Image 1: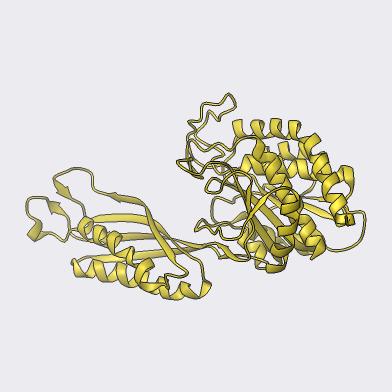
Image 2: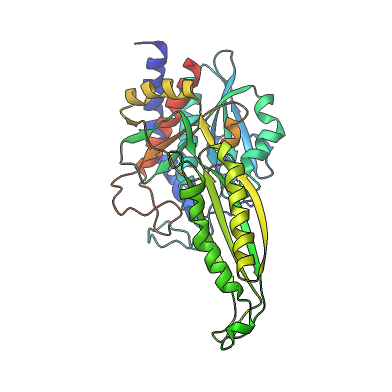
Length: 388
């Protein structure tokens, strides 16, 4: 048994002792969520649970340093602070009663980070540990990008950033740690189609923007199947359509909002070119004109190969079944950390995947046991960074 093996065992045992209070913390922040950009109260609660204050980062976030027992570059562990504008329907006694909900597992991540850090302070870890309490993961501009641009990672000598995210598409006991791209890049876009409205009974006198917009929605699906190598894939989804006020009046304009997700940075320019061609060309074919606004959000999230390899052994030692295939077209601003230092994002399985509520669903509710499982993954990632 190596020194790091022995440390892993002691750290895991110390986390077990922290879990009751960590689960209580999970329930507390779940019941009282805060929106992206308004996480000050949540950050204060987590700081109180950590028992040590930190510096402000990204406006409402915190960076909290736990000194190591020896020299060397720091390893950062990241959690997200924000909730989503979702009305909860789980029915648990600690459910949110507002129009906000921790429907992406950030409550679990916060509790796991607290348990991991408090246990680290008990057993002593060989490198400085920087706890990143990151705001605005769910919106753009990104809290992670703000942290990177603040220089705090360089200030604390961070050499690796570790994250672990609950994932209902993986079975309980499974942790995914895959090298290379594991989360997609994302661009959000808005389209306005302007035509000539009027009486619905005289379509020949009009230039129908709803018809043009409908054709744009259908045609945009071809971006994934005809513009990008299917081995790597793309996803174009429309999340909002808005037009008209009544059944017998064709409006002058129609609007939509959507997102484009890619697994390879080199596909971006080609896909965006196709997006513009579809939008403007389709509108023109219907006698309308279109306006297109594109907002870059997150880059592709690339896991460091060396970190991933070392994490496999640590995860197996912790009793996890390691998945080597799972990738997600979800986007995560953790990708910004990977652009400036080594990064590892792991996905922690929650249970039977058949019919389970997805992330961002009003019924999504990880079991309390997930707090310990995420903490275990964070420990594995930290030790992988030390070994690497």
